Length: 128
Image 1 (cartoon, one colour):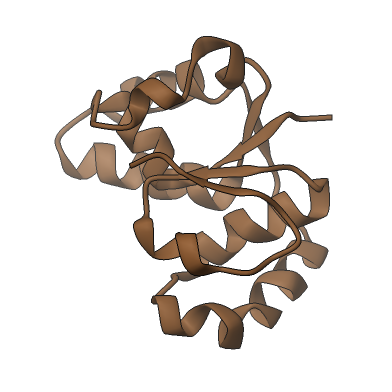
Image 2 (cartoon, rainbow, N blue to C red; image 1 turned 45 degrees about the vertical axis):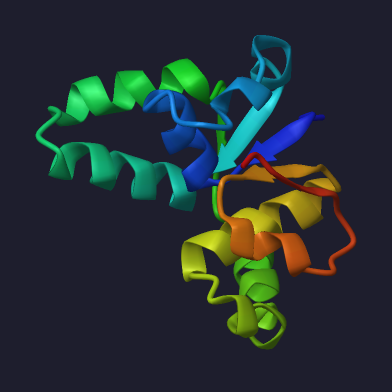
């Protein structure tokens, strides 16, 4: 079982050495996973910045040891979360991350402050 799920914003915080990234310690990251949807989001942001796709992939996989597929069950959960998360402005990628965390019953880490008011059956850690 994975110990934590990372949102795209948390992965970007680590890669960019942003404020809050220090909360994602090596011991925490060793057991981390990320939805394939969120990995695609991070890769896209890195490639937009001019990083070659292969290098972007290497950067992401250096932070995220396990990338899990977005399943039909995750899609169902992510879609079901729309009314609960709309007031906080969460995207499909955000809901994909939450769906994975709910499926794994694992805490989730994000840099997105709007998540702090969500009331879900998992622990949500906002890193800044």
